[in-house]
Length: 483
Image (cartoon, rainbow, N blue to C red; front, side, top):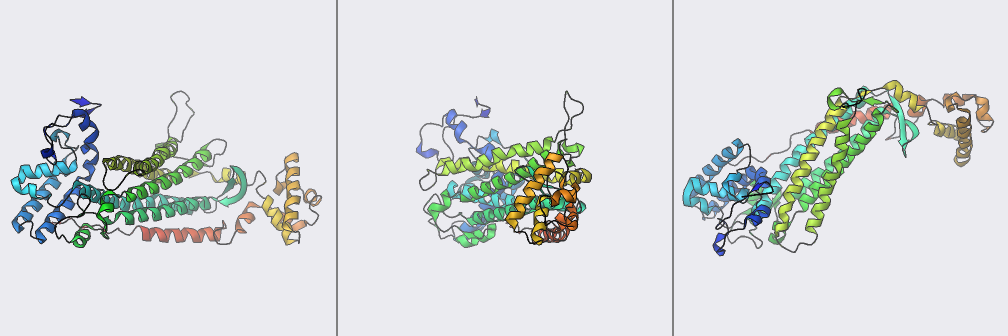
């Protein structure tokens, strides 16, 4: 039977919990309950956790050494089988990935396969699997974020002398180096690295051995289990361990923040690519044309990147709403965590890769940036600062320069082109040396305090960013596969 594209069959009794029931599961219930197509991506983590669990049971005498060896070999064989599959084994009829692993073990090993689940629940099992998967994918995300940072740093290095207008309220404000703009997004992504590292740390507590909710009745060494699987330590409360999805919330929050930063960068670049600005041009490989208008070159990759932010951010909100009313301990609502997390991770991973690709191929129009940087009164603050050097209180200087700007607009002459006499008519303290202050190069170089846009400071910031990048790119520790 097919319901909404999902293949379901009436079951006479589930292999994990069928003894309590006389009737089989309704096909409609299977359609909403069965999760194998979604949680199949946890199969390798499930097998790793099962190998360690079998060994832990062997340590306390629940399994004999030959049974541990048989289960370990059987699980390793399943790992290879799962790796070769191109799609989830929906035809197996298994409810979820845990059921499939156990069913295949029993098929291959006989009764010993039924012993693996001793003292373990799917509650602590799925929590362990998802934490392992999250830790691994967040490690990879940190490396992918580094690739976006690297593209921005390289772009800043090759455009170090380029000046463009900085904006507030999308109005020209003050001239800044293009590399300074690049570094602003490097800083945002640096914070994202910290968020993902924090989410990974939250995930790195092992629930295995907590059972359904009350713990396990066997004297399992949970510290050993946590170490073998690469966790920082075991979860300390069994009720919390099986129902906690804070690590999913943290991962989704990090995804939401990171996607928001990518969306802001995309928006800047979309504006900058427009003919009205003409500051940058993406290469042909990440652009598209129009089916009607032959002249068009659209920044579609950037628009699609910007568009993904909404769905990624909504996953975090959806997970919050799923968790907000749940009593302790495990509730089936938690099954929604995987579809939300997997979707957000997939989308953000693609966004990060396309962001690095777009930035790496950008062409920057230095002359267009420079022409725009000197227009629209961007040197007004320089004139005010100049008057301060002549002893004019800043608030008075601000008011005088405001009137100079109004005269500039009325005459259609930019500040750096205004006759000195016109400036002096309003700001009497201005001398012949005022022209030296009214240049965009001078405006940039005077911003030499830490964090400023002078070439010296930006060059230092680029060097520091590249050094941090080298540290971030150091390989993350990976737990070894237990043989």
